[in-house]
Length: 350
Image (tube, helix red, strand yellow):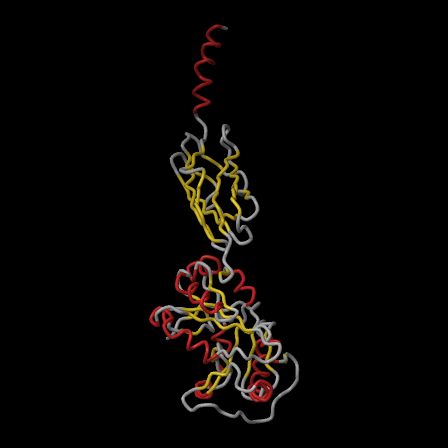
């Protein structure tokens, strides 16, 4: 009996030592201070420092406002480690000290529930600053389905040129939930374009009733960008109705102008579809000549200033607001946009 007791006294500590043990390089990540709307991301390194396989018994759980990427694997062998990427969206937390916890569940007998923490202070955004969430919520694609030559002579500000026969190929990278406004000179070609796109699954495709003929008759040359020939008068019989038609006032009451203030070479490398490259040095003159303050009744024009990190864009938006324009900068710039939405509406010039 004494021998059995001695054997058990010897073996129990050894058996207890042979177990998985979870460890983390930094259980608390303090991001310091960020502006409201910025995405905070951190990779926690989780390691098995025990002698047996460490198993994640369920998916991690996060408190509100924080998300985690999927675990790259469910089991860690002794000495093995993984990165768990956590993301905190600071939108809506302005003026608050936040502490968000990620719970990680394992078969570690000592720490079956590991707490990882992201904390810091979220400074309220200024009136001219908005996160990418707001731009994505308001975003649509304005498409001119005429030929490149017709488009070059005159087009609506911020419209992208995709001729009718190229629509399927050129729009294939874009989500089918996207709101698309289509137009041409009279509405005839854009009505056909809307029918084609809806049949392809782009169910929110609409064409502007009357096309440019109807637009000019109602609003004159407001928001029309002319080429080197000067102002034009559009002609033809306007298509005023039909399935998938929308009154142009619907567009005008939520019109977005995106101004990309980066260097031309950076813009050509890649930009949000529909954004216009404008030099910050000529921005005041450009806006004054392209977006008159004497807008038609019911018009609401929102200007978004965009750059890589938000620095120049936010200065530009602050200035435009001081001049009476409804202007915002993309907080955190395109870096934050890509962090949130990847390549959403991202195009590069050929």
